Figure 1 (cartoon, rainbow over the protein chains, first blue to last red):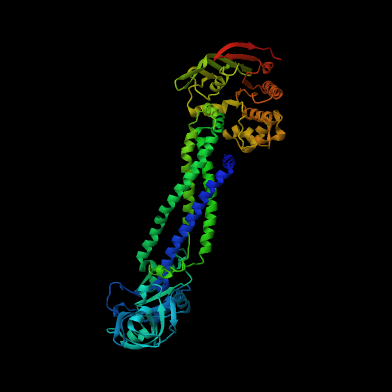
Figure 2 (figure 1 turned 90 degrees about the vertical axis):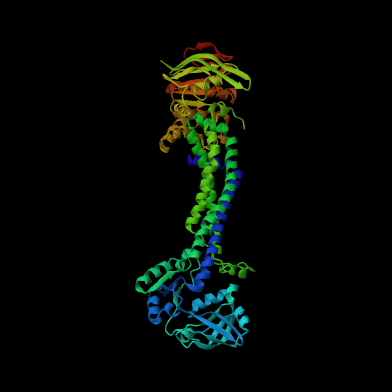
Length: 407
Length: 230
């Protein structure tokens, strides 16, 4: 029966190819569309984890405390060693957020001064997305600060100027003077006005010696959500080792982003469903025209003893074969396109606009096996649904009447 | 005992207000192993009679018994099963499945019966051999002449070893010699294998070798002739 269905499919080669092409196009489009949807999710993931890591270690109950000292991790060196031993190749970054007042002349701005380590891969990743003018921070740089360009404009400073920093209520010197070594065009324009970076050692001297607000573990090479299996494993390994600290993956740090990522699937499914309905109509047309042309033949099949149900099965099989062939071709083209685009691409002229939504302007499309399977399943369901009506018509044919039929 | 017992068979077609009486009370019996021709001019009701005997249509009145079982009241599914298990058909327009080879066509009914590929192809090949078509088994219908296609159609019916083969004007699309040769072949199969044949024709030249002729005119049996075996 399979051979008969397959050969029947190619009796009207052009018509079958058109329907098959439509199905292939829709499946390929769906896969690429899922990939682009995945790219948007990856972009948000990449932006989030690029700036705050895939795993974070905080003082216990850090979300509820407003007291600077209560939110600190003491013995930062010891904790860092434990984390580094279980980070599975991740870059461990110590971060100390210092509530501070930046002053230049008669201008001042209150913000969280960002003191942190900058391991080379993390720095490279950061500077890929944010353009720097001047010099970036070096390790143990105790005298330099890098400012967002908007912040520098607000303070009326340029490269080489001095800014005064006051951090009242902290545990270090509480005041320091820094030289502006670089200006950043941060991709997110809103973040430009509150970006002030110093080295971790400088921030610790200013506000909390040998302490950090958190540790971040960065995996700069992971750009896609689907590739991120390590964060859960590392967090799981660290939690029992750091019982008095709070270990969280990026999913726990940003539950809102996780919800948004989960919402992508249903949104994409609804839109692609519309395309499947259109492709389905084309398949119905192909199957129905084939039916009209073959009424006499169906009459013969029934005369020879084929039951109506079996005839329905044959017609449905033809439709499913058509859609399955189209789906296979479409899935192949779609996944190929996503793999090609998956190396990363930007949309020229829209980088800043995209960054304003909290997304990395570099897109990394990805598509999961489940999504490809969903696209193929949609196509097969289209095949079955498209055949139901013509097949049920054929199944009701009276053999003698059908054999008298002239198309 | 009769294989077929037909009593008071009527068939009326309705097209809008117009009624056409294709059969008007036909009584007929066919014995197992007979080689019977239903003869009559076009429009006499030959095809309708064969369709009703083959459970391809339902009569307006009367009854059709096959091997002691009433078959004119069967539902669709049972009718299909009845045709599959007991009847073979040969049609005027050959009606082979165009995408299948001669061998696949001949094996098709056996496939519907669920026979394994090896068994059905062996039986189909044997039937094609009986009809002198073994050498052309791999050809598709469009690569065969009309006479060859009709022989494949007979092989299709024969391979399933039915109780009876009903052939509706099997020679109508063939030239005289080819048509005559086909009837002779069917007659040979009837004698060799004991297959019961009922075929319709309007060509009197094809009636020489039959056991029995049932003459049909205007939907009524107007005469029956039994011929001595040749």
